[in-house]
Length: 160
Image (cartoon, rainbow, N blue to C red):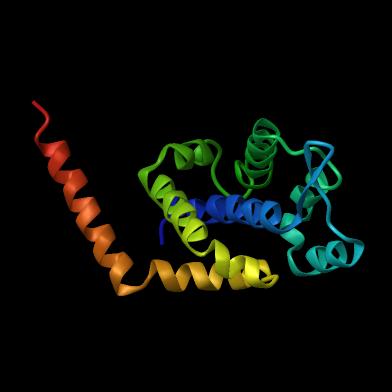
């Protein structure tokens, strides 16, 4: 696996983790969306996902808006991955890459289509990842991706 592929996976994982946090811990209070994570859950998150704890801390008991969420996640990704785990500038390339866009679109489709299942009971983030990977690697989704990629390539070849 290339550094780009690894970086795509790492950035997508951070974004998926943030989505998972919002899904289970975002509460409406006085017309505002606040991230409320019970003390016991905080301890478990700190133990099970230490690499994400810095992100969790930024969200704790905070009003979450779209802008705040995007800025916080992107800042966390750059601070934890760009120039430390990966060469400087690679993370910017990841955000612009087709592979990353595809991964995030698939995750969005998966989470929307499985929302009822995900709401039935609390699932930890590892379970979400397991279910998403199973779905993404299923023959039906792989076939869909092949067809979509072929259609995209053929459209690119017909530009006049």
